[in-house]
Image (tube, helix red, strand yellow):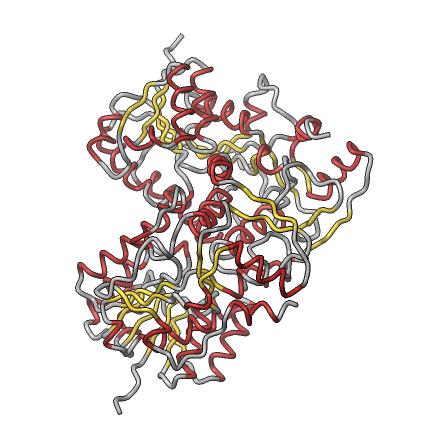
Length: 308
Length: 308
């Protein structure tokens, strides 16, 4: 049995990064996290770093903007997973340059973990954001770096815990705001499952130079279906406030950044067709639950039970 | 009397850009707006473009990523105001390169219109965003391009119309969420006034290579003062839900992008001291209402009257 690859995570203390680090150590991969010297003094992040250490993670000090430190860190590992934040998408060209120089990286997963950015229907300013990810994809391909792109759609832990409503700490029991007509399908994947599937993919020849779609069959739901599922659980009917697409587009146009960006992402996620507008082309990608049937993923149905 | 400078606005159909275009034409400046070929097919933007044409604006077709079109547009004007969106801050290096090549630009105002990014106390990911603006400032200075930086703080039309609350269309009458202790001062400036002061600054030697601070005395208020002002107007007391800073920092850490970005901006705007932490150093900047006393700016007090 081949040794498990050594994995370096950039952005490991971030929202999705920490789940990927956890999945990596649990799957027995020697796991490395690149952190900046000043990260240890951040109150929330320092707690996380202690957890990492306790689970055997090796901390490497370095910075995306320090080429030498980056190349040095890359030489210690086989696989690089970037979970860098939305403000750092463009900066990944520096990581790509370092991967080229290091020359030993067997697989690179750029920071994605959302929609399939090559097939979005977003309006500005979300379109520009997705296009930054597209540019990174094209750079990776042009440089001939082995890759996997991860499409994990909406995070359950973030989205289902509020049904996408603002200023609430649990799914609503009185009123729900629905963008568009509520009939467009989206996919909700738990953060733990994003971690598990991502780590399974890193050494898998089936995901080499392909996209891993977490289009988990039980979790593909329209917003109306989601609300109905929740109503059945709480045995109550919610007041539904629909925001038609043209109103939403007007709101986007009339809001400053980043409010317009939040709205445009909502538009791209639940108003525009992100799922059924393309069938999975096997030459481009594979579906996670299909190639990893052994993973018992968390269904939306089960996820919502925690809030009843 | 010298002829008024010819002004080119990039991002003129955007949130603040349209107010700057309006102020420019009203002040009698020959006004040019750079638009992309496909902008005219955008339903909301095409209406705006018709308004521009009716007020005498010259439309120039071009793109930030098309160097030749940019240089050609720049050669037609004297002053460049960038109001490009938050996703395009970094891309302004292309504009700077074109300004260098054109060689005729007497003043450049990069896309700012917020806090003084050289003096912020923001946490990530807002810090990275502000630092992108800082990088643009340093590039402008290194290239020796004459500049003015505009700090206009919070937009009244966006912020006061909801008192920063989510999912409301008017200032709240029952309950208000307050970030931090509510005692930190911020500044609220109407979009029209941002346009007026910005246009006054472009030909003014007092703002050359300086920052124009719109620290309008009547509009410097803590959140608690703002709520109290509103309560007096509606003769009613609101329930106040305070989110302490450490809770807010935890929420930022536990939210995915861009929700963490929105929260971090809120933190930077109303929890951290953005105003009184620095006295205006006359070598760095000038205060708008002080150098343009003839402008009768809209006070927060007056602005809120519209919602009573």
